[in-house]
View 1: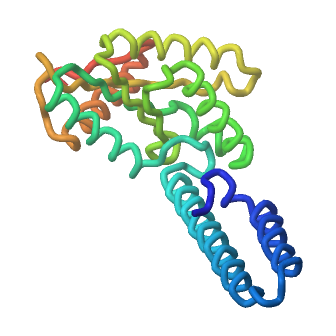
View 2: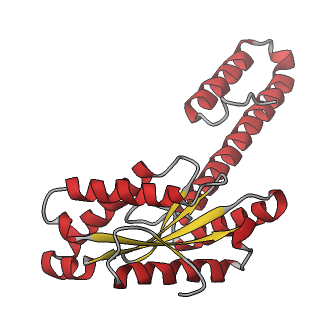
Length: 230
């Protein structure tokens, strides 16, 4: 049986195959046929294992790439929906609370029109890096589309953690050189579980979106938490 950890290296497999065939040439001709068959079977086994491993690795890479936004490297919309749904199922099963934060970049359209899409892409990548820096390793961050982003706060997060993330992100925006200071991040949040109730996923996301629009319209410098008045 092929050894795990070695079959995924074609150079190692080739070296081992050469060793097997060399041993055949050194054996007595009377048993050469039998050894030839053993060598061929061993070579085929290792080659087969290597091909399967390479195919599996390629499949895993493709699946990971399919979940990522090409520009920013963040999770894409489909992947974020899957993450939110999984988190909601976890709350139903184990209890706790999760929060969905919807973020939109105020002033980005004007910025993009003024400086061009290439510079706009640089800004989006910078903001994506800022989001990853200021969220916790187990939270999920994705690009919803255009200049919209979404954050899933896990592990029974307190609601005010979203405000902490917002404050840190805005501080990092202020530290960026001009003209990045022309962009502002408006955030709205909706919660799931506990006293917040258990709406379905689309309702939860829409609530966060409505709260974000309220923050945008009123130019709030804080995360707006959804409530029934919105």
